[in-house]
Image (cartoon, rainbow, N blue to C red; front, side, top):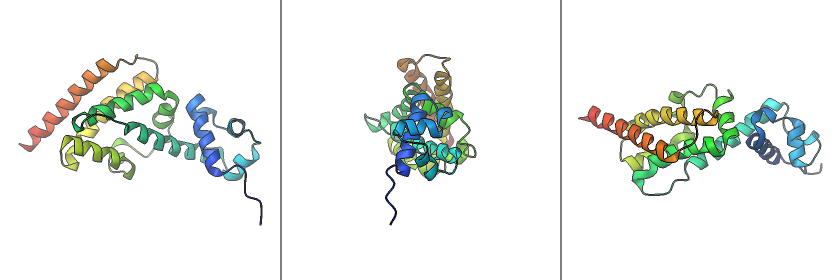
Length: 190
């Protein structure tokens, strides 16, 4: 029986994720991941035939991290929407390299916002929002799309150093967008 690999596939993915987090996804390569693991490049190439495969695995790990970050919301149900939106923008501030990897690197191609709205991975966010807003799921998705466009724009501008993060001002703008989206839903149902 061959010896069990000392460096596991999960360890390689985690190291690539950390490289992306610390210095940007463009720096994921066999050498930087090996340095992070304090090993040769052989285990990296053993688990991944190409660096592109490794980057895709690191992207999936970053996406999981992002989802958990978004859902770390405190407060009452009425504040869930504001909290998720602020966390999305705060993620661009706190985890700029991961934000760029997830949303500006091209690795998410084929997942437009309208395709993503029906994805399994978004269901925990949509369910929390639905519960907090007390709407039907299709209405929740409408509000989500409106807010997603707004918060993504804000986050992108901040991640690219074109705007300073001002939580009070952003919260005020986000509340206005949320109120407008909710009024539009109410108007459509009456």
